[in-house]
Length: 504
Image 1 (cartoon, rainbow, N blue to C red):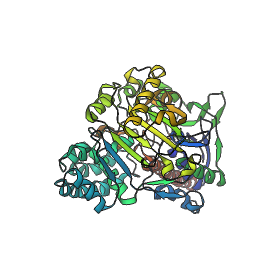
Image 2 (cartoon, rainbow, N blue to C red):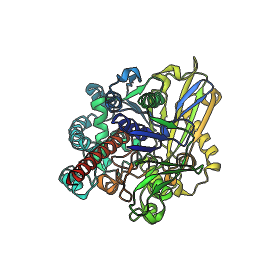
Image 3 (cartoon, rainbow, N blue to C red):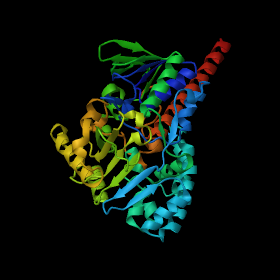
Image 4 (cartoon, rainbow, N blue to C red):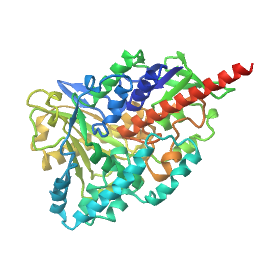
């Protein structure tokens, strides 16, 4: 089959690579001047900044993309362990060193509340149960109601109706520790106080396989995957934006895509790694949409957006770990403002990324590369980020300078930022959402936009907005789901064709 893949984020790259490995002829179309989607790379004055995902868990999912093609992953990507996984900091000055070492974790918990050690160990067993049930579903397609009904008993048993925070709260008393063990949904665009407890599996996922970083940054993983795709004969077109997914009126099957420049490319199937809501809303004419009408798309719940400041310093900050999570004093109020009120607060919680802790080559000698990420409301907030961004930048830099990075302002030598406008205008994310459809219970599994389009034949979706959801393990697994669906459908079509020929 001739297959077009729209978008070269991890979902699109993984889908293109799997389909090319399986013998299809794949053309990968990317709007921007380099691949990666949210994993775009910015390079300035000798500094290298990963644009998006930086926490690699379940590295075997990446390695599998190479081994499926008969290649050694080590020839393309070098993975390095990160320890601690996170340094978690609180407004009262306390810190929690988070990793997968049992004794170390017990010591850290005891610093806050020795009575919570027993509760943590019980919670860990709960998280393991959730992990064993939930992770088995990560590459299972939920394309029918029956597929959902099969897992319903497990969801009821695991109390999927409760939030991650509510589950943690049942085991742990110290409020700071509750936050330590429930912040993970933020990594995939979810509110810990609302995201279904199934996402507690992320905590055990990290414990099972660790947290990793690729030498050269996450962009090096993108380059490795793209290199293999080209070696296998895959075709890549950069600076190529899709204007419309073409559909045959009679059969309601996709026939390819029309580009912004007016040219068309025909295909037997289209796999879209673009934001699923944007794709339905703007790439498919409404006359072809029975379920995902404009009204339905508008009424869906979306993840928060992000403000991210990338900056390089002319000195190093050795006391800053690779991954630092800074949880603000008004944490729950802040998340309610972001997710429910769509209100931009003067308070913030931050993720500070210092990749040069693990790979110093990402900055010039004696320098450090950073990004600091702040969750913010998507564009339903009504904020004008052209005006807001400079003020917000100064607030964050001053805060970091006061609490964690002395004299920061005088040592920043290069910087760049992205905000909700970037997610909307450059990444084509609906409402400027950073993680697409929010991971609530009523927007998960069968209730989430399906990997196989419910509107158009031979149209498929991978990436954060479809099943299983955001995060590198999720989007890479969505690619496996789509490749398996296309493979199974190809087999069924071949059998039908053979049977028809025999009957003739």
